[in-house]
Image (cartoon, rainbow, N blue to C red):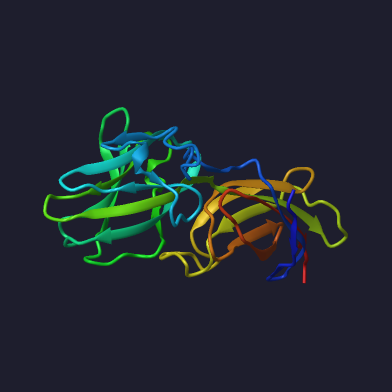
Length: 273
């Protein structure tokens, strides 16, 4: 278990300890055999065979080469993403060569629903006329496929006038659930503070139309007998969220950084200064 201890200071709020631990929320790679270490196992192919696999000048072990004149060569894999996935990211490394124009030949990435055949997300990487690229990392936000059964496809579209090929390796489709904040609120004496109202907002001015006490409200609740609260479904953010705690006529405000696929634990001191 990984522990990261840090000190976070809020407005009129003493934060004793912040601990980020391995969480029940998940972060997982949905692609099987993305490095082609087991050949074409788990992959379906269009106009390809094991002859498309190579290990010369590899990024990591084997890779696959796609590209043939007057042919579209493609690899695909069918997967299901959990509905709890708040962020899904496709990534792979590629090395591209073409002697054609960027208009005629290109790499196409597609996500197709298995139940309807509808293409719900696609992107293209244009060919680079006459150049051989170094290994380059490609990433795509594929969060809209969360909760769906889809076929992910990487294809090289090649017309009949000239040759284009691309080497592809280390394909990953990373699904991450929303972050969680598990907080404990204590008084200055260290006693657990029950029935305190907790509101979590985005940072002030980070969302248009935000209130004077912060940005967009994402969650609200109360502490239990042990002074604890658990805020679910918080998207990972670069900027920390505001945590606003109210009890009787007093209000204190602190900050909490939330990471995709992680549960963050914090203990707050309710200080009446």
